[in-house]
Picture 1 (tube, protein in one colour):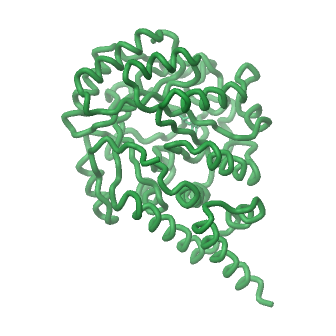
Picture 2 (picture 1 turned 90 degrees about the vertical axis):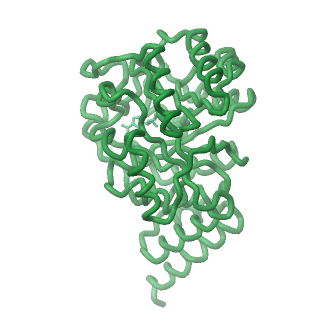
Picture 3 (picture 1 turned 90 degrees about the horizontal axis):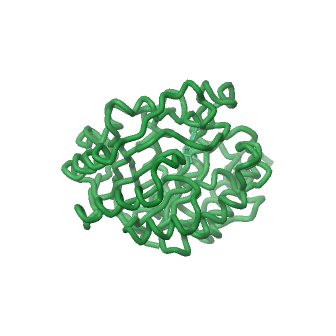
Length: 355
Ligand code: 5AD
C-alpha cells in the first residue's frame, strides 16, 4: 500500500467529517492536526471559508483596540507586561485620552471599541464603569468590549450594567497542569474558568482563546482546547502564536507555529461555524501576510490599533509586535485595500455575534 496516498485520502475524509459533525474523535483531531500535506490543508481552509461565507459572507468586522494600561498585578511567564518585568515602560491613559481615541475611532468608522489592559487596580470598578457609561452615552450605536482580566463577579456585573457588551478573557489553556506551567501559583486555572462561566451567565458576548505553541504545550493540550471551546460555546475565540518577549522567563523559548495557527483557525471555524474569529495581531506579527492568511483560513474579524502612537511601543506583550503602518486604525484604508485584494470587504458595523 502507498502510505502517503492513504494519509492524504484519510486527511480529506477527516476534513469532510469535521465539517459534517462539527467535531472529531480525539484520535481524529490528532491525525488532522498532524497533517502538513498542502492539498489537504488547502481543502481544510477551503471548507472553513465556505462555512464562514454561509454565515458572514465576505465581511470582515473591525474593532478599534485601545490599550489603556500596561500596569499589571500578574506575573504570567509569557507576557511582556508582567509585573516582574522591570524593563517594561509603564503607562496608563487618562480618561480624556481614552475618549479621544474613541472619538478618533468613531470618525474613522469604528463601531466597536475594545478596552484592553493589564489587571491594573488604578482603574477601580467605578472608574472603569464611568468610562464605559460615557462611551455608551456618546455613541449608543457602538459596542464596548472589555479585555481586562480576572475580577470578581460583582465587578463584571457592574460593568455590564454600565453598558459593556462583550468581554474577552482567553482561557490560555484548557489543561490545568499546563496552566500551572504558564502561570505562577497564585493564578488559578479554576478561577479563570469560573470567571468565563460567570461572564457568560451575566449576558456578555464572551471571548475565550489560547496561544498556539506556548511552552510545554502538546498536541493533546491543543485538542483539549478545541473540546473545551466546543463545549463552552464562546461567542468569540482569539488565538495566535506564542511569541517570546526577551525580558520574560520564556524569553528564550521558540515561537508557536504559523501553519498550526492557520490550521486551528480553520478547525475552529468548522467546529463553531458562527463564532467571531479574529485574525490576530500576533499572527500578523510573525508573517507579513499573516492577517490575510488568517482571513483565508476562516477568520472574520480584525482589530486595528487605536491606542495613541506614543504608548503603542510600550504595550509589548511579545517582541516584534506590529503597531504602525497597516496595523494602525488610522490606516484603515490600506487595510481595506488589503482585504479587497483577497476578495473580502472590511466593514464598520458593530458585528455582533450570531450565536
Ligand atoms: N505571545 C503571544 N501572545 C501573548 N499574549 C500574552 N503574551 C503573549 C506572547 N508572549 C496573549 C495572551 C493574552 C492576550 C491578551 O495576549 O493570550 O490573553
